[in-house]
Amino acid sequence: MRLDKMLGNLGYGTRSEIKKFCRQGMVIVNGEEAKKSDIHVNPELDEVLFNGKKVNYREFIYLMLNKPSGYVSATFDKYEPTVIELIDEKYYTFEPFPVGRLDKDTEGLLILTNDGQLSHRVLSPKKHVPKKYYAIIDRLVKTCDIEYFEKGIDIGEEHMTKPAKLEFIGKGTDVDFDNLFNTENEFFVEKKFDFKDGLGAEVYITISEGKFHQIKRMFNAVGKEVLYLKRIKMGELQLDETLELGEYRELTAEEISMLEGK
Ligand code: URA
Image (cartoon, rainbow, N blue to C red; front, side, top):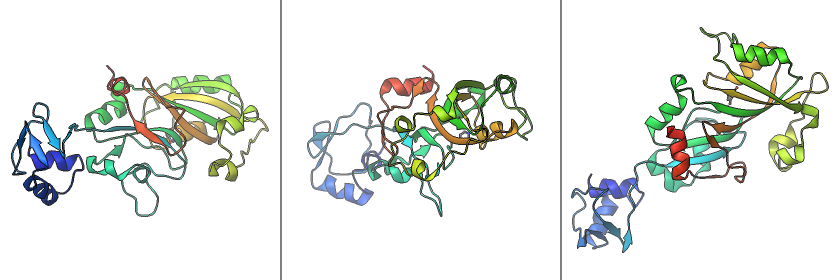
């Protein structure tokens, strides 16, 4: 890889800036000043110092975001704020994108990466990576709903949905709102839950596909509405609950291998 490409990818500057830094003697490769920025280096084997500090090359970045409501899962949108706007510009040089989409009003676990292979693995229905959500529903769920979800539901697609696991947690009216939402959360302040039967339900639902609005459409198909949705787990990877809405952090090596299914 060209030295200027390697340093450019890591955000050290534009090609012409890096050329200048090299001329100024700020870049050392294997103990020698690199006067030219177009030389080739092996990022795995060669030691590169920038301004005396070791450069750690990496091709991919992996971020876990606790997505807030109000942001679209895209890298660019003409009208709406995107999840990319929530992360520091220093990551932009890696060109991260969201792994799958959460609806604008859905919260919770969203991975941002530039690793296309990993994204494909996590999203491919053939790989059956389960995605677990916490949801508040406008009516109580019944045992027959759990059975329908297990068998697969007609949501107007060519095929029925794959088996989904629906777990009843409790009545929606019992939700501990203070615990669930920070009261400064816009969503909580604005939205009053409208339980149609006066009770509602709190559930976990686990699906292994990602059809457009899939969970909302599955509940609609059994005469119910999702009032609140939050993704809490993808495969073995769990949302770090210490992340406030809108906060993110890099994944650990162990977490990356969880997503890789290793
Ligand atoms: N299903 C939905 O309906 N919405 C989401 O954001 C994710 C899954």
